[in-house]
Length: 372
Ligand code: GMT
Image (cartoon, rainbow, N blue to C red; front, side, top):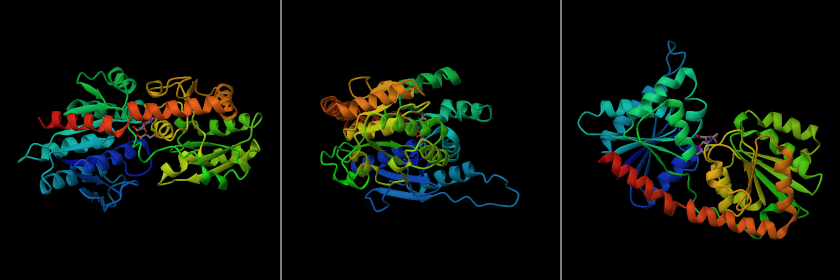
């Protein structure tokens, strides 16, 4: 198939899923065309059967807000004709789904169906906002196929928007050949010269991630056992987190690493992943950590319980419950047998339920459905 993929190309779970999906599809022989405003961060443009088409948005003094949505629709329609695309697959409803709808309407000589994948905040935060509610509902209803990354997000979409069309659940996935445990953890020495345990957090540092809770958890954990924390990513909560680390006197033990392109090299250095989010429709970072054998200590929100089974392959607690999350971390850092058991269980969950081999064929079937 010839597939056009649109996503947010910078840091964020939906862009990562879209990029990894494109790479996997190309490996399976499909021709993939990324149509975005920048090269997606995890995409090597030299990859066979992968093409990148930049969306340029020209400005004009009249435009206080340059109409990206229209420039994207134009580019989608143009790429679809030039490269004879079979379909468009857009990730994150706003505004990609509406652009795809316009491109479908512009494509007169040839049918151009589109698939919309809902990722989370496009429904739970942004799409529910009054200014975007109507257009988000409309774009979901107009999509040829709609997928959601968890049962929870599917149900939320139905509850919030009252849409009647079918929503397929296709979970996030992980490449278990790339994301794998590193029993030696030799690279951890630069963060933990004395061989002390390492925690990791990865996110876009938005308020919904409760980034400050990671610092509070570390401070609590360190009252019981030594540990260091790697903070990977960037965003509005980074500054406040740095200040809090100083206030709680743990700043010497926290490494703010900023945005990283190769998280598969960092995650295996950690013993535990922290994901204290207020809301998480799936929790891709937790899945990547599980594939690397780092059990997640996360919150019991949204679609997370569909991924993590409490006490088996990770631990869950209520958002903001620092004592409970710290207690789980301490247990994992101090009880070697518990850590070993959970590490193996989390890797097994990633391999058996969320590997590319299991999930990519589900997308291929959904494309066939959209085309037919
Ligand atoms: O919150 C983020 O990390 C960004 C956001 C996005 O759309 O880029 O992530 C959402 O999509 C990820 C990939 O499908 C999911 O794993 C995340 O759970 C989801 N985030 C939220 O629901 C807050």
